[in-house]
Length: 222
Picture (cartoon, rainbow, N blue to C red):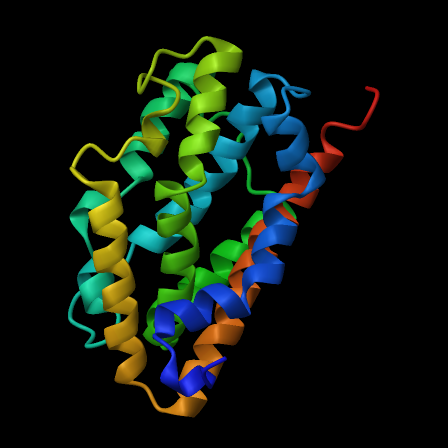
């Protein structure tokens, strides 16, 4: 197997974080949600927590756009906050903000993203990658299950978060995104690349922690 320093940085990120990625993806909450064992309220809960995460990811895009490493990842076609708000209005009504609060794990996740956006944009890239590339990949499975399980119209209100209307060719977009990662990695020294890899692992762990907090709201057998 080639040494990590000779591999494309996108490959390094994917392989190095595969264990953390799988753990989050196969968490109890997500397994039960995707298996049809939880109702639409659990799906709405997840959507509400993601609203906080994406507000943090997207709140400083103007400043990050000027950064040599993070700038190429600031892409208007990816922005999700407005779509999430549209979904929440559909799922919970016009007063969807009432009673919505970040779970402890969500608050920690948001704090980390905000810290990186202002203090270490290279680390911010790790969180950008885990969320948006995941939305374009596994997120489409969630969309399909939501449409089938809860009768949400295909690509309609309730799943607009997962519908990237400005991305004409998702496969080509993901290839281009990985090329951006490779370019960013080539501009870093080895120490910085390792730090970003560790942050990528942390990003998946933070996602997993949100799922665990959500899981406590829906006890088995309740």
